[in-house]
Length: 294
Ligand code: CUA
Image (spheres, helix red, strand yellow):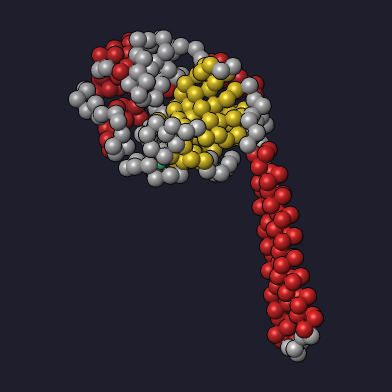
């Protein structure tokens, strides 16, 4: 909001100055083209060329330096969020009292009207964290933490996108920012911190077996099971997320099936191999199991 005000002040100022300078130019060339007295010319050069710009730019500098303090303030919300740029997805961690309580991926949930601090990191290359509807871009570097605080003023789902070219699937590195009422956010966070649901039926049990048998747990974690991988997205509550593969597919059982068997067509050069050797029964069971992890 403050940045918005700064923009409007700058824009209005620029329009006034443009009108002033061009008006003056029009006046001396068309309206009154007689030679000026030396005294008037000197006053114009010193006043309009030195004093005026110094005063105006000085005031603007003071104004924007003043804003810098409030822009870098940490959040007052009880939750801090860490977002880590990966090869082409986003790891999102919710930190409370210094402890990571929830790890998820490709989805950032924020409480409405609260200033939430977001710390940004990357594991290998530079990415850029960007939710156009909520804030400007912020680069994510390997080994150096950058910070951003967001205080969303409207409810809704907003698209986020990586804004720094980071490799083959850069354009497929998206996420969703979901702004929720504070109480709903708390409920969601509590729910998200629970371990994964047990398979509800035979097909889901088969899916879980496929997951463990194929070694998916080497890269993915599903809390409450032996799968404890750290390389890929945490799948504990993957069925409740809205997109799969960082904004690539909607979350449905068919998407999981397609994704698992043909990752390489959806996201070139992603780390995950395509499991195209699985038969359709196993793939469908796997999709059904993951969909049940809500
Ligand atoms: Cu990450 Cu572009």
